[in-house]
Length: 310
Image (cartoon, rainbow, N blue to C red; front, side, top):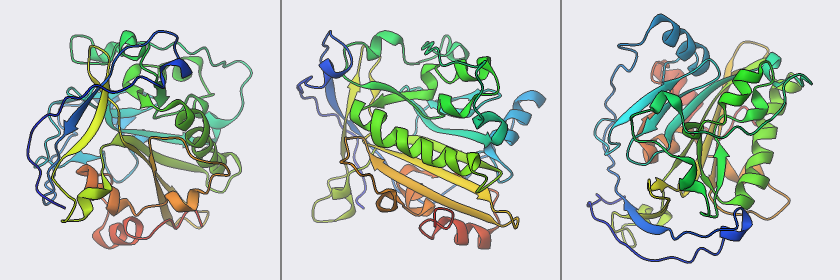
């Protein structure tokens, strides 16, 4: 993978997908997302959190630590959003989360007729005064407001379900991706808890920017193009990851990770084709997802392609 250079390309693109979601149309632009591959260096993100925030982080991110961004990568300024139902690190530049952690439990996924989906989409109040996505950014864009932590994982409380609709927990998804294969992947991951394959699971989800051409020195130019929407220039990820970590009934830790391009897929969906080693995702996002894992356990869980799924 080549060493990137910072630059921007501007080009007008057709808003052909706009009619899929909204009647009005707005132009989007193609820009460049620069990234830098380098050795991982860690920082302790726990510093400065309140006891309640620390408890929410420990509950949602699990026993192996909050994900850490490689400081050698151009992640730019970020802000933590910490809630009972999920925890995330929000990019001030891209206006989307770098990652979102949630602890999915049987109590939360169990159907509850007293908790309804009301779709109360709103900008995140924890980011008031900071760069963030606003509702007009999505209007007429042709992209869905796609969940990272799904509303379907929060049935124990109306408040917790409603809080999944803050835009910090969203990123622009192609409608046929969000409503079809992504929704089915969310259901698959949730079903492992519903069906007691595992008693609970830690899930980390996020969008990222990737171009397979960058893997080959012949075709790599160090640049990755992606779209932005709205006046706030909310970044549209080219790809999404979803990582699942859980203990089986013997107490052993197992993991699986999926990567999908932000596009429509043909049915029937074959999720085995989307499995990637966690280490593969870490190398292309500059994120260490489980920084406190024992090195031997880290190698076992992050290098194979899906021990939990099989």
